[in-house]
Amino acid sequence: MAIHSFLKAEKGDPDWQYSPEKYIGKEFKLIDANTVELAEKQVNMMVLRQNPTEKELLAKHIKINVKAEAKLDLIVINEADSKLQQVFLYDVHVEEGGAINFGIFVKGGKLNKHIIQVYPEEGSEFNAYGLMMNTVGGDTEIITKTVHRHCDTVSNQVILGIAGKDSQTVFQSMSVLEQGSDGSETHIESSNLVIGENGRCYSKPDIHVDCDGVESSQGCSTSYLNFDKLYYLQSKGIDMKKAIKIILDGFQGQAINIVPYEDIRDEITQLFEI
Amino acid sequence: MLTIKNVSAVIDHKELLKNVSLEIKKGEVHAILGPRGSGKSSLIHLISGHPGLIQTEGSITYKNKNLKKLDAEDRARLGMFSTFQYPPEIPGLINIELVKATLKSRSDPRNEQEIEKDYNSFCDLLSMEKFHSQKFMDYDDISKSDLKKNELLQMLMCDPDFILIDDIDVHMEDEDIDIVSTILNSYINEDKCILIISNNKKILDAVNPTHVHILVSGEIKEQGNKELYKRIIEDGDSQFS
Image (tube, rainbow over all chains, first blue to last red; front, side, top):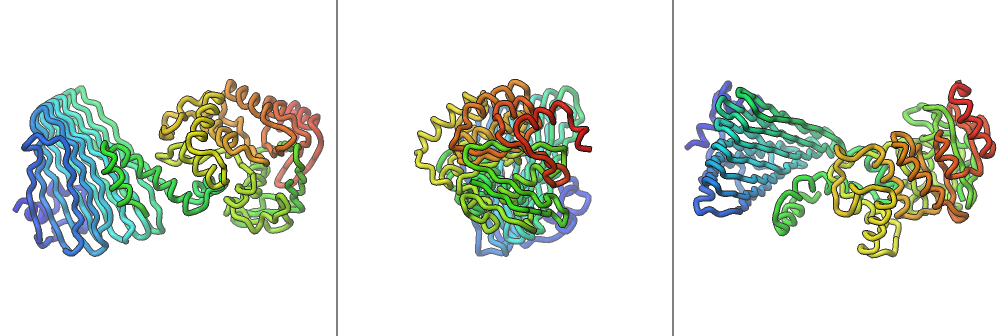
């Protein structure tokens, strides 16, 4: 199975070069695996909800193929409990002139890792946005690798992370503009909020350019739920509990409000409520 | 309305205020001037209830209540409002939502439609087009001058009894200082009392202080009427050193 060999990838494998050292070469028992072909019927919206709670180890491989000139809004909603270790691999192939808006909202897990590999064809577009949060003492990760091999391709990524007490989020994003991807553009942005003691948020946006006439940008920031912000709100008359909610809602809203469907926005808002 | 008696305060064991006494009555406007780092902002934060500032001596009472026992939100709910010199950035914040939460916490009787109507009117008054309802605070796109005006916008929405204004003119463009001066001048009346920190003559002329205090190294060195601020501004900061 592809997922199995992927997880057993050896140190030095380019797909793993940005992964935390401790996971390299570690074997995962394959309990569950499935393959999903999306957009075969030219659907324009799909929500994947993945909330496994009973299994301790889980791996899934999801293939997403966006047909030429098609547009897909895909939203992944995933919650894992504090004992679960899971890895999801998304293989995203966007055919000529196609576009995918990939919303990814993941929460919790001992290890909750989502790896997105993207291969955009000429004139196609990959937009990723989302939010990950870990407040259960675990590690939630979103790792992306976008390989631009054709001209006039676009990739945009905006991923937010929230880490609670003794928890961690990781966003590693590599975008490669290979020879032949002239006229393409890639943008990676990451923003984090640490809300608990010993919480950690890692971001590593990484862009490699090997062609001409491309546009690229990257940036990341991390802030803390600190006294200054709380005091500012409290000095207006707002109590501590509400002040924390305003700060969290504002932060999360930067990703959640991109979701184009109100009922799904509500579902995600509820999922990420602390 | 506010009485400060022999107050001293520290932050991280560093003494910031020493034996400060002030009394502010209804209808009075008190201006505090002084060099950078003299404790002016600390005084406002102490009154507002900053959790890091510890009152070591003296007492502060507002509307006959001992403020030492009250958190920042409880003090605000008594009718005071602080405008911040450096408002913190809260990513993703929708300003109108902050205003609604603030008003709700202060038991404001207006409904959502009335709040939005007033809010948008004040945005127009303050030339704050980027702050109209339902817009995110895009801090990359908002000037420091607008952030300072936003403090005034929130103050106008709350219509407090006691206003603490901390260096509102700092980082503000000249035309915005004119707008703020005009608004403050027309806003002040005999029902309000104001404690304002500013070294800007235009702002001070607009609020027309009834009392002026000069704070140096955490202590009040001189007190007087509006002639005092005019002299201080004319002579410049060098006199403090």
